[in-house]
Image 1: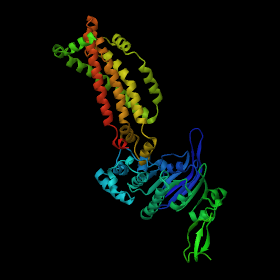
Image 2: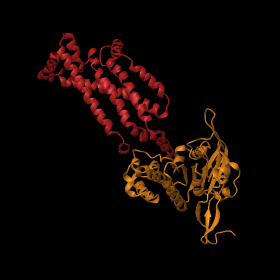
Image 3: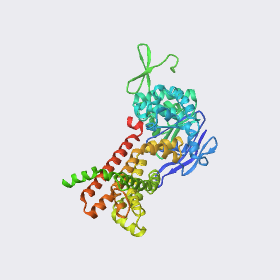
Image 4: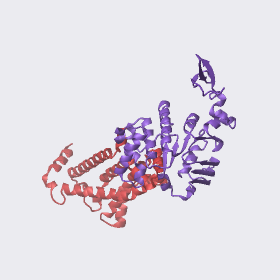
Length: 275
Length: 221
């Protein structure tokens, strides 16, 4: 379990990234922090592995205050996947994947065996193991990034806009892939994005942030869509644009679900419809 | 043109290729002074550059000092140090070290800072210590720039190492100062040509080393 208690972050010079933030993330849960730039979402994420230390307040993992833990040891115990992969350009795919196990003292030979398993897990052809990051596509690089994050089998996986730099089609594939992985692996995931659709897809719960790390609403995607807390949330999720309001039109004897612009979104299955 | 041919004739004379003041020994001495000067300078400049480049502390200060040091006239330094330290290798060596430090320092700082900040951030987030980041990320990625600093320093020192002979030492400068004293211009010119040749050989060798140390995955890009 990860807990934030009244966390605040002020940067030297007075910029206020996070005003006062509290949240509990249960084990095996995936929580998505979503907000525009300046919402402090990345700052909050990086507090978990002490890439950022809060000015005041406490972050704890399973009851341990992280500020009392050695940052290097802490970071090796937490998976971290970032935008634009952050792979080491001078190391091969497999050497990138085994970075953390090797730092933790696993032998290279042993770690390499695991690296090949992980490549299959994240949907990468093992023939890419000896390639360098620059020889891969953006989507493949992100898969390597995910494999690296999982390599030491951490309980917690932090993901900072991991699919932000790839094209929409690949992003869709990677999102589905992550959903599948999470069903198998059941990690505690904290995921940061500015894309509300991605947030609703990935998150068991979604935290919508205003600028300054102020929580606008926390809830499951269903809860947020059913009852947006205020106009800010309504605007953010697109409810005001009608993008989220679907209605049923009867066509050729079937119930077709149509959005506010009249575009067909799907077919309503019999029995699923409310009267 | 005549003196150039005379210089070539001087170089072709087998008598100048043997004995303790022959070309092989003088070249070895010259190379020795150069390597020693660059090595001592590297012992100072490389650790300082790694620290300054990695932490960002002292970086602008050390670059400013290095820039100022570039303006010091080496002949003046050799003379000054010789007056202080006496005749011998100490005075010129000290001057060579001062001459070599700016290139080495600038090269090392540039090398460390050349790594993409996002790559360094990712390495830190995976749990690398600061030393590991330096050794496994910043230095390997910046190695060609670091060697570039060594190259710049070496070429400067090898060209200036003739000043060692000015205060009683050996090296290829001997031919220049002997020739100057005796108005033996072919000998002077021969000495200069040897220094130029040595400088070119060192420059090209280090250029090759620079190419060879470029990290593989980055070259593949």
